[in-house]
Image 1 (cartoon, rainbow, N blue to C red):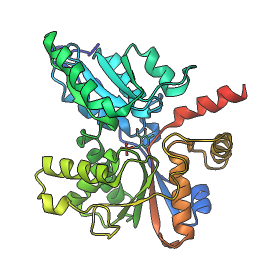
Image 2 (cartoon, rainbow, N blue to C red):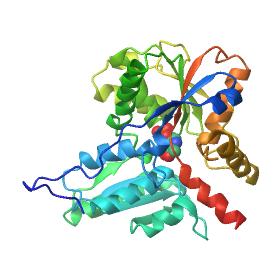
Image 3 (spheres, protein in one colour):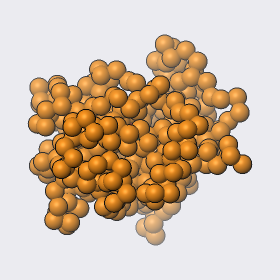
Image 4 (spheres, rainbow, N blue to C red):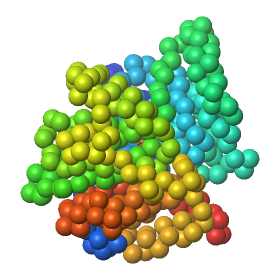
Length: 331
Ligand SMILES: Cc1ncc(COP(=O)(O)O)c(C=O)c1O
């Protein structure tokens, strides 16, 4: 349940900690450029990573989390869903999850944690019916006297969360008296990169923003999400129309050469690779998110799309909990 202060006012259930920003010599050697790592993987012990910021923003803005439910959708192994379920349970907020696709018969990983969280899980094998099912659920909840808060996949609507990351980066750049040429991160729904792109407009950072795609949403999804977030902040829609050209003055560029078979498609060799990297770098690059980001970044440097003379900031967005899947399989 939410805690209360002495005066009885609700206390924020989920304070976000500032994460360290470190130079990593081993990652630099692998990538072939100077790489610093923003340690969002240290946000918590459950593997939420950067999504903790978006979830904190949602719970913070939710007037009555102990009474009104949150409705969210996502795929069974989504890290964001797992994390949302974790923090909703702590906040006492009822959570309804519409699953796009069926969960594995033997629940493992994030899906097992989602089921164990007490969230109401509705499986939706055919994604074409998503909107009808969601609207029916919301109508039912309203009929029963509750006021559901609908959160899109990846909590992409919570722009304040990743914007906070951008503000933190700007402060750390100033403290370290350094300037990054490129900021690189994995991109799923685009929520994180959009927040970073928008916050950059305020602090005039000169870095280019590059997203390594780990999910196969259409380019329209990113444009729509970007436009919605920009409009909600009062940016002129014309400025938000073309975020994907790769021009440094534009919002961000996306690289899809490391996507592989799509979201969450991994093979045993990926887990082995993650383990080896953990040994050499001290960081866990989980197959679903960070391993692809590292591969994409390395490819881009090798191909000259990011100059090897660049000072790169790699956002380690989290997902360290994937390691337990590997451990399970070798036990
Ligand atoms: C660890 C991790 N990295 C990257 C992403 C992708 O972030 P976004 O959906 O904001 O693009 C997610 C999404 O849940 C995540 O959990």
